[in-house]
Length: 138
Image 1 (spheres, rainbow, N blue to C red):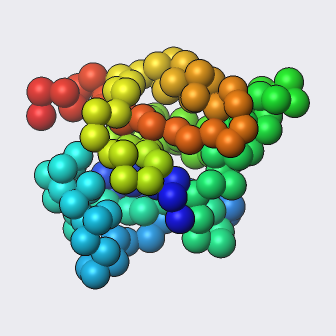
Image 2 (tube, rainbow, N blue to C red):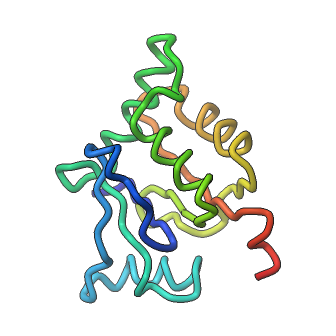
């Protein structure tokens, strides 16, 4: 897997069965390091994947929607991100080992803008950190 997403803590995804959230494996030093750097701790964080355990297909769906001229808001990944944003939970999305210096979004419109700009071409890699406005000073 080379496209990653972490959420700060569990979010209800029962309405989106194509999205899976799992605790970070204690032996996964790299993902623990990313979680600790972005959220201060890794124990409550969840790794987000598709049902098969990868992250690429979620991003590919957003890219395919754009290339096909359909609304990205209808894709599973964007619907998931909206639920996370509405819950006020921080998240990060990155590709490979490039998890530092991510573009930061503070609102849903910021998230959509970053997604649209980064998924215009296939293959698409997404780099994004979401920090709600009220969490900036926390």
